[in-house]
Length: 249
Image (cartoon, rainbow, N blue to C red; front, side, top):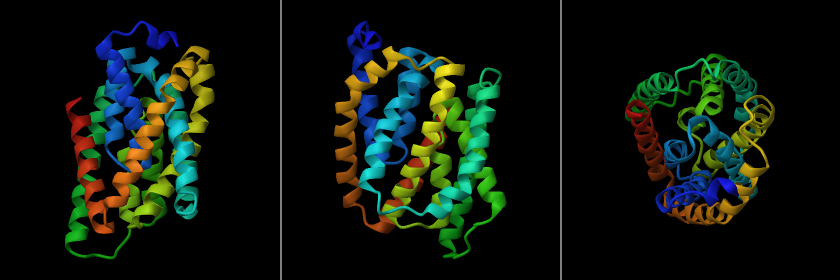
């Protein structure tokens, strides 16, 4: 709770807004989640903020997997999990050595390049899906590393599921379960290695839980308004914006 008690009004508003965005992003409003990282880092600092954000993400993950529990493709999750865990471990080991700014530049450029290829395939109405081990390894490892270093794996995983051409609810449900598993595996590293999660951070997260719930409910209502094709283009646009934010951050 002490993390919130001493904040000025503007900082408190930014934190509350970030909690709302956590819920909305997990409900399926892709791309907005990446705003959480710079907002929370600006208030608490880059590394300490990751320990506050992670429990927020897990609370939203729980709500998302319950709501979308019948809309999940386990095949893609099982394909990615081993590679993502390898990326998480690499992030733990090299987290203090990596220049986060340059990493996000590289990741943003890669995401934009893959979006261009994805849009080109859509334009050609190609049914070819890059459903092979190399593609899964690349996406899983880079996503795992990105989520450990800066909670920035959302755009990477969106690219993967967009490439698999999953229906809207299956797209969201599969992503929800994937990040629920991955985020849980990150908790011990944050507690015992980076020491960014303690009782104080958890108390602050519980205070923010109502805003996460409101964001989740608002996100679900917004997602339900999107037809299948419109939602796909929405995710593509938001993923592009997220990549640009990485390049400019």
